[in-house]
Image (cartoon, rainbow, N blue to C red; front, side):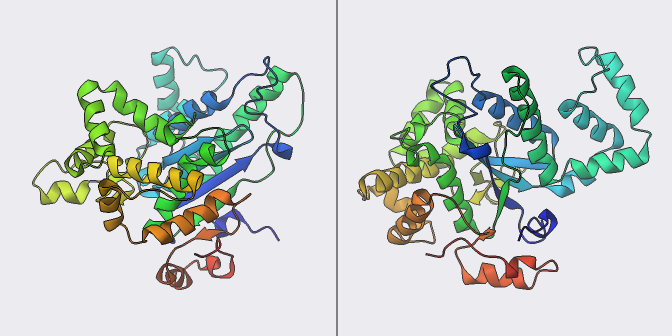
Length: 357
């Protein structure tokens, strides 16, 4: 029986959710290599995700856009929406849904429109709630694409399956495994042999962002991927000006070092981008070859992780070899599951988890 989304998504339980949406009948509607006249919608989704990340109180930690489906790792930041002024709420909404009658290229007209509509308290409250709602985030991603695709194809009908799947991520190990699974999706599908080869993924975006910063940063990232701990730590700073959620949460470390305290919130403490790239490479080889040599750099990465290499391989093998992910939450510890049962909205207790290790 289908359960209402409000019982599946609760920031009090976890702020992280893995969202999956498939095209109807799992057809290759996002990119069909056999139909040259069909537009490749995967870049459109990447651009739309960046727009939504900039305007919703929801941050994107990872994504993978495949030919027939997409994965998005979302972090709910509802407190951010509480701090927005009425003008800010309207500005963000117009950026996502510009009114057809509004000349959006005329800044003066847009400012006047925002000024007028910001006075409507009920409207502002409604839109504030929508801009922090995961359902509206996914609707704002999927519905415009469905309309555009049907218009270009000159047809009507369903583009997406009726509901997207949302899996609550309950602990850090599950978050790291989910992020890895999303970035390695092209490899699991057999359309890439290394993580970097996968098009339209968050890891490709992260690497390209570093490449755009110049040769010095590229060399530093290469050193991090060879196992240099110092370079790996330095690589963590490269993500502060990228739109995706940084892999490393550097806020506490910066305070301890007496450095800047305005670092963005990241995904995992003491786990920089360089270490994540090493882990991706190692996991990709495990999946492709069934094993991977534990070079010094990889060993140091696993020394900072809770799971052992064997446990990690078992966990990621189950994810990457699964035909579809089942369950409504993902946790790697009994403590995380037990904490859900004591949460005020504890509907997760009666829902099924992804298969344990």
